[in-house]
Amino acid sequence: MRAVRAVVASVVLALLVGCGSTSSPEAPKLLTRAEADARAVVPFTRGVRLDKAGRIVDVTFEAPAAVDPQMSWLKLGLRMQGSEQKAVSEAAERLRRAEFQTRIHLERVDMAKPSPIPLSRSSDDGRGWQKLPQDGRVERLFQDSVDAYPLVQAGLQSEDMFYEVLQIADAGLIDPGRYRVTVDIVEDRPEFEGMQVEFIAAYYSLGK
Image 1 (spheres, rainbow, N blue to C red):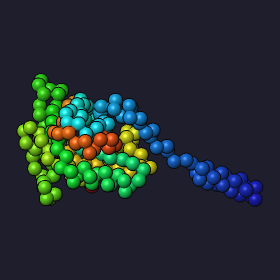
Image 2: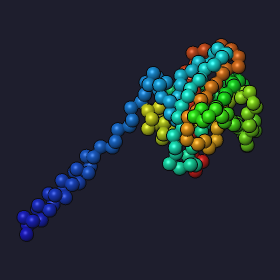
Image 3: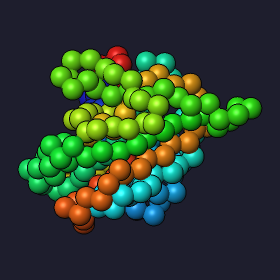
Image 4: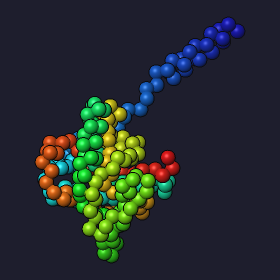
């Protein structure tokens, strides 16, 4: 009987040790800038510069089907990142206060002919929404947020870095399909030369 108990105890101990040594799954590999710039499915990012007027984004991409329709609210904006939270927040605040003006257009391109997608932005008081004019002009940027988990899984976000997102426009709940987005800077802004910033297209879950 003692022998049986000893065997059982050994098995239990082995199981406990085995459970304790189970390692957590590794985080997805962080994409290089070149790899991220080649990605053409939501979520995606593009490295951009903000000091010269003209087109900074022209991307044809796929919007995949979302498991939950409430998770397919598409946001389009700029993202800053860095190892120090204060520096990232200050960079975002500079852009937010600078009345940085852009023109943005989104269209669906997998139909008989391209179909423009209505875009909107936060109202000036931050309490509602307003549609963008036909020319897609956006007068300023607003603080915003997107779902982090899909970005981490896509290799576009590191848990060791700090991020800030500024809204250019929202496309709302979009259907799966193929789209094209373009963004133009309205005027030269030499004060932003060298700023590390990305264009970002990512989902936000309305269920939050």
